[in-house]
Amino acid sequence: MAHDLLDDVKRYLLDLQDRLCQTLAEEDGGEFREDAWERSEGGGGRSRVLEDGALFEKGGVNFSHVYGATLPASASAARPELAGRSFHAVGVSWVMHPRNPHVPTSHGNVRFFIAEKPGEPAVWWFGGGYDLTPFYPRLDDVVHWHRVARDACAPFGDDVYPCFKRWCDDYFYLKHRDETRGVGGLFFDDLNSWDFATCFAFQQAIGNSFLEAYLPIVQRRRNMDYGERERAFQAYRRGRYVEFNLVWDRGTLFGLQSGGRTESILMSMPPVAEWHYGWTPEPGSREEALYRDYLRPRDWLGEVTE
Image (cartoon, rainbow, N blue to C red; front, side, top):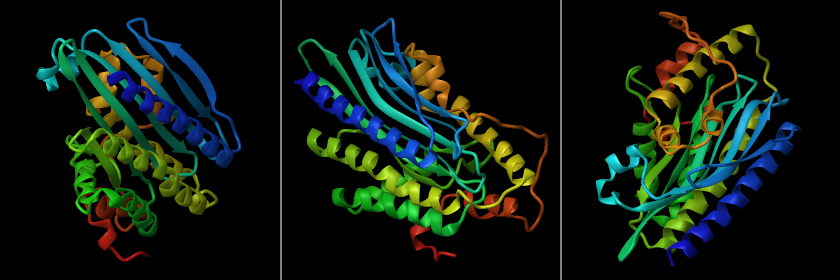
């Protein structure tokens, strides 16, 4: 029974990777390069990366299925009740870094985890979500992003979007900077409070809604003019993306500790990032507006668009 559940999820995730890559490549005009890999301890995946495109300076959509007889240290420490169980972890993760600083960076993933022990019921859960990291944000883009997220959650209960939106704000928070990574979205983990069919349907609703949330923003902003100032600020803010992924992201830690493929795990890193000591934005600038108005949790659906 447990492997039937895993197979259903895996089929969906492979199809999701195909659909994301096809649509994003068509938007860019370029192609994703596929790199299949195997993990010596069990499992493998297929990494797909688009680099130096007309729209996306770098982007990746990765599928992985790893398994083993024992859990990585990060997982067993967080869930001691899983000690002594074998595991399967399957998921799709994606990060798109546009060239134009007016187009936000986006990230998402959907995943499934199942742990088994002879003579005991399988333990399983879903996780995932997506978030948006703009450099020069527009309020109507942020409202659109959150409206799609809310609508994807709506069939599962009125409290689902507020709960997972708040979780996203809390998770994608750089404690050492006292700022959110971007304007949030959805984040959920350890989801098994509904039956399997409902949890799986929710995962599909989130995965399937990403393009609806992201593409209209891309299409509105991709042809906006920018210069060296905007590119420099983009590179500086990309540094925050690196900091979060290497310091706080649980998925990165799990991947590295589980013996995953390092090149695929670090696919999410931007192609160019910069750090400048003691930099602060000019008062009244668009760069200051990001810090002042956007890098904190807000009820975006209660805001009035520009």
